[in-house]
Length: 183
Image 1 (cartoon, one colour):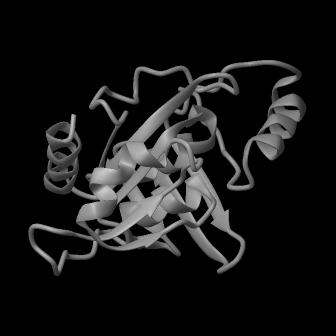
Image 2: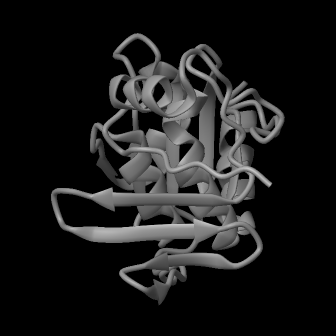
């Protein structure tokens, strides 16, 4: 069994941690444990595979949705050029937030703070690995924007993918339906 603690600070901090912790270039497979501290708020998020996710020691459960048939709050991480790929979701959203951190955005999605989080620009798998474990442990779903499984991708500093995730299978299916209808 292998475990890893992945930082929220992004790839450069992750690259430094890999160099110090692993003695050079390596591939991390996030099998078991993810731990992150959200520095701006001091919140402590943890997830252990098959044991659930916790936020400040309490189990993470997704908030209930209040707007049926519409994305109440959409989270985005995109370049301006790739934003058009998320346009169908933007048009169905009541509100949009761009936080600038994949890890924090996915963690908040796991708690239901976003109905859907979308990254139409390919992003490093390494930067989202810990938060994707949080999402998985709370029952959320993550795929590429084409609906392909994220779990089959290598978790290293070179692998990139688009991302579509939601706190529930129903919200993810709704977001996929919106994207597919626009193609």
